Image 1 (cartoon, rainbow, N blue to C red):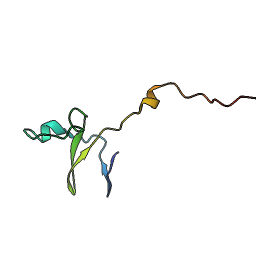
Image 2: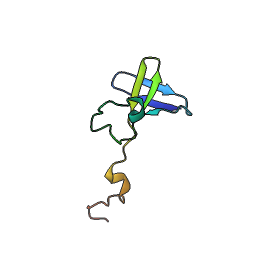
Image 3: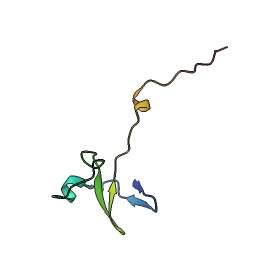
Image 4: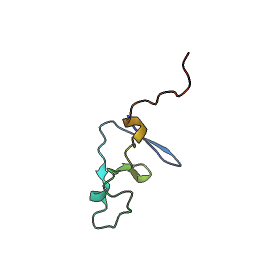
Length: 73
């Protein structure tokens, strides 16, 4: 199951639900900078279309785990 969490609601989608890329859904529209090339997709829900951004992986996730600076016994 896929889950989209918004400020007001949680949407549950089928795992095989394929969204439409934002650039394709809004063809000809000028998109805000955060949406351009972000991999965001539009999903049709019971409340209408919802834009879902892919989960970001922070820099920390890609780095080695941080070591403690405390003296070790």
